[in-house]
Image 1 (tube, rainbow, N blue to C red):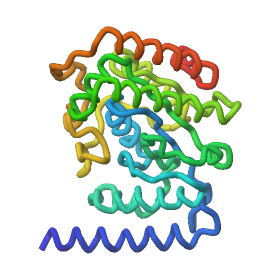
Image 2: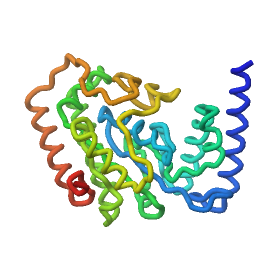
Image 3: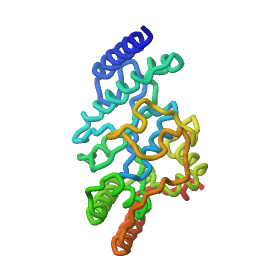
Image 4: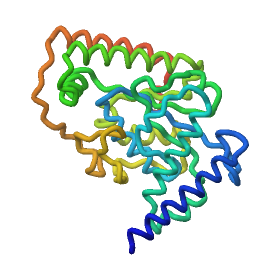
Length: 279
């Protein structure tokens, strides 16, 4: 009986969300909502720690999202699909304590984790109120983790993916001549300078509520296609000890990856705010 009631409640809220979203006159706005939504794009590459950062961000009550929606953004209309997806997902996570907040739909930001060059129309970044967090992970661990997940890839294929994806991140940030809308982070900073990163995120996004290294576990946490299914993501808190990966990368590929990483950092530093900006 309890499961049936929960399912009924979830269905009811999905219909309610659809009515409010679809009856709006413009995409970022919402029926009965005073301010339009703003959007956060967490831009990264595979095995970067983006699932961890997504959970930290979405545990803030001013942000709604759940992970990688797989939406391919070809026009502003796709942002309406994003709003639909995150609120429909939210309907599955409803509890008695957050029902009133869910009914109000008063989140400031709607978030998507964007990987694999799914941002097809970069002009979206100009047209609407967006803020982007660009997350890079240092190359050697990234390549080893990619090969651990994609065991059929060669290390050259992993390197090529890394190169192409980092090039795309540079292209995305170059669309705007406004660094205040892009924030560059590395995985090492998130793990080793956590307090500073959390404070910087609050300043960058101008949220009233602070961020914490403890985060909420969702029903889709660890689900393949949405986020990390291999690491410590279900711990609900940052785990700094890395899991063992018994894969080695050749010195030649490692050196090439380091050069790509360093060059990308230099290019992004011209178009993004960096952690030192918030010190």
